[in-house]
Length: 432
Image (cartoon, rainbow, N blue to C red; front, top):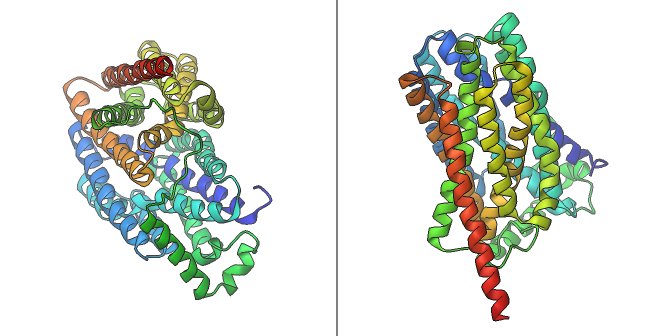
């Protein structure tokens, strides 16, 4: 993998894209409240507008990219929109201007990761024996960016203000745009069989080969063949009814809403209520990402040995321990130590959440992937609504209770799946 120049390019792009987000998103809520003088309810308005706009626009762009739009072009447009967003935030001094920029340009940037990973997957399927492992490495590139990004971003903000951090995010985005335009091979070249050199094929690929690939894809679609392939056989007792699917979807929303709420509210809790140094938040996010990395790499192997649902239960137990620990932590060492639980929680959920969803919908893998992505957007909407309401009525510290409650409910629901699977397995064993 690491001898392949294009594979290395994708990993580098994932890292740079992660840096773009790591320098902007953790600081954005703090910027809206402290620099623009918004209330918690106004923060909710900004977040909800951003999420809803991103969902609508990214879905439209994804639909058209599947219908013929060049993914590379869509990715470039999304990156350009993100560049305008973060560059504008270096000079914005009005709340309504921030909302307008986020709605018009921020929403168009929501397709960045989806298109980048779609291109990476297309390349992996044609040039690698283990595409799943390659996608995991790309995700690890983003996680590594979050190890270094937030600590540097919050340090810049503490010493030179929000403008410095947002300017770095703009520069990183500009690097991504240049990579996409001038270094990333064309889509036709990425689809060439692995017996060809992708870099060389970028200039010699013909329309005939592209048409053959399109015909092959259309043929598979007519036959009902999924694009995604499960990495391992799921347990035969996995519940697949509509009620079970709804319950599992609810658990997914709750677990990721808890995490999103923490990311949004923690910088504000530290600076406004705990009166901590501005750099604390960056160090906590970086430590959490560092703890996630080994868990992400080990999750796949552990799931084959202990089961996906069992590991998700472990993740939610870790989440409950994490939020409880943060509630009682008042010093930096205590908060940093608590991130070990956070790393286990996010490392497992981010890696195995979609796998579990696909296990429940084996005959509809494409639908399962889309549903999971939509559930992540719903979780962002739930957390966006929660932070304003809870902080306005109580305080930012109280959002930890909401995250803990959501994690506990998700744990109970997942544990119900584990018990049901064991009962079904026992019945099947007796019947055999």
